Image 1 (tube, one colour):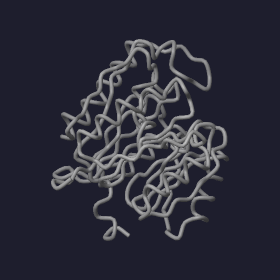
Image 2 (cartoon, rainbow, N blue to C red):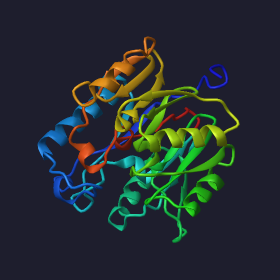
Image 3 (spheres, rainbow, N blue to C red):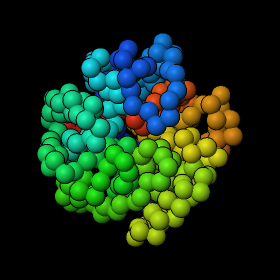
Image 4 (cartoon, helix red, strand yellow):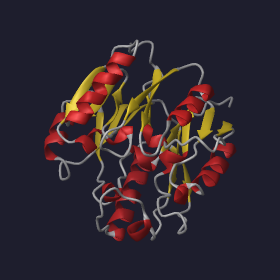
Length: 282
């Protein structure tokens, strides 16, 4: 599998967005929690610095918009694969305005833009797991079957399977890719049921790495020139037992990233960037 997926995790650009002051009071959340705005903004600045300064990705930084409290979570606004970008139709009406800014940024990168205009469809990018071989789409409170069908129509080169999301907000609230052919998954019963369904649905074999904390299963894998495999993951301060599991990745550059404040509004590490591999001829 490694040979076939040599390009998996290659990225050149990252779209990120500032944290608005309105995030603290106005951002959507499954459970009420008080957010320390200054700490949330500092966390995000450190995340962005890792992507740009430490890893050398070209950053497209969109300004924070006070009328869009959740706008820092750019992943939900678009799904990018190859040179095509699907601009999603988010279920939360308060977030729909985020899509226009994302569309403009991706147009400037000369990507092929597909817009989800069907008013019966909803899709959040946080429900979309691309493995390099296929897509898994979580059916959740934010993503429905019609949204998954439009994603399948957009990325016809790949199989698309739907998975029910139980308990968490998004599919990627409990899982992410840790490398080619490796799914990182939380240890809860719903998470373990989910990975079992994914393995049964797929024609491909995936290894799994189980971490004790579901939210720690959301990490960002990249394979970058001059850097090799890179994994952004939750810190030991947040999830000490899960952090020990990540230490087993001896061949990865491991970068712990603090996410203590944004997690209070259901924000995970993958939520805060849209990663793009822009080829010279696009």
